[in-house]
Length: 76
Image (cartoon, rainbow, N blue to C red):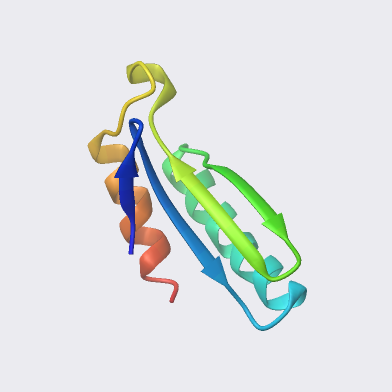
């Protein structure tokens, strides 16, 4: 579930291992390229954290971020 804090959408994901996390990140990257909207994220072994906001709009959450979050959720 995404949470909204400090003008960002945030969600963490935990996978079986690094390979599974990285495969998911690759799919997210394809969505980011298609939407021309790139997340801030971190990955440590099997954990992935993603933050979404729109820099061009003054670093706030916009429909662009909600669309990206919905696209990510569809991967699960």
